[in-house]
Length: 239
Image: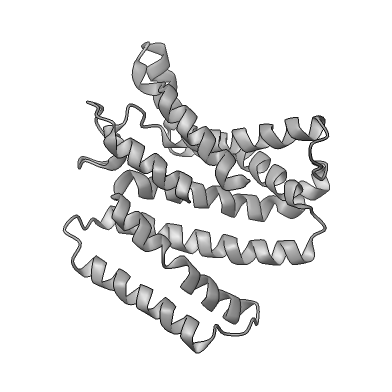
């Protein structure tokens, strides 16, 4: 999460003349030299996958082997994980950093409620629940006074909250019921998400935009700083 925050700070501070592809209003990502979210997200899956694979080959760590049977068991989690990154990148694209942080702060409350309702876990203590409600009241206050309010931004914020809460609760269930070690989770999760990436590129027509930009020798589809930042973000958040 901190890595994504720093990436957003970097993106907001980078001037550019690139016009946003998905909105007519300025957004944080519009100020960078890279606007292809699907390709950046794929880097977030590629770097941890390669890192775990290489370290496994060097006997630095051990991860469960990737098998078809394991892939079938893990596919629902990987799909949710992909949707988390997909909604997250769109939220970063359409919202400012304050909105991003405010909505992320609501995650513990939603996870606590979901654990209690769906996993029959005990409710948080009264003091803990009060703290979560204070955070919620702060978020509500922010929304009511947000001068940059946008339905598109808040749609992606809501979608992100749903997917990240689902992932966190589902991951707890998977850890409890599947015989995977930590590196097996990291490897299978990121590899399956990477394999799903082309489907989303086609669905949102990003592949056409990238190929067109590359064919025209445009510099807008390639930005080393953005690639490095997102690659590091993938490694940090996975490890």
